[in-house]
Length: 301
Image (tube, rainbow, N blue to C red; front, top):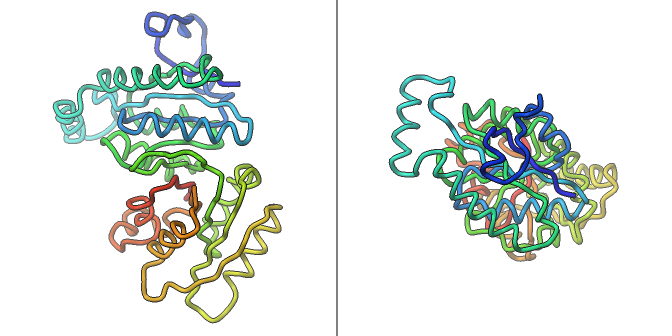
């Protein structure tokens, strides 16, 4: 079953449905039954996000909500300079309402692709992005959102990952090609954020056709392998454990190259161990995968 989300008082005029303004429902109420939320801040990645959310929901029999989310400069709790920057971007990207209309057209075409999508409607949430993300994603167990794209997309990704602490599914910049859980590759390090990610993703790991845990370990000890087997046993998932060294390459490139060699269809990692800014400065694993992966990334911070 698929759910509907919106907080727009013009919902009836836009979508031909009841006006939620007629009852005291807030954003939390509207998304309270959505296990998976697909955030669509950028028309360029909207279809990939919708396809990903659809496949993720089908694998574990969850319900989804699809939501356009956009920054409204006049509602943002930021500096005057930031508001001016948001207004200037409208000249290049169009207004928030224009971006919504583009997403809406793509969404309507996507709905025609399968009968089970017919009951899904598109929500439209505009305002201060951080507050919008909090309200929309509060009850979600998985959030599908892009990393690359317009300014809203980058800000939404940052807010979902760092402020909401959600399990995030990110489409590749090249577009999603399907088969999400055919072969999940887990980039494993015995760190707490990696453990949290696997625990949060357990339902999807159980549903995967194949799982490989890759331990990029340049040390002679077997700590990576031992802890990988322990977490898999604890979660009740079957996986092949592979131990390799980086051989002088970056860990990110090692994971990407290995994923290509085994035809991985999704990569799971614990994201940004050192925080976003330090990862950018050091060129660490998460940033490398986000920038270069050609399959979806499943992650949490």
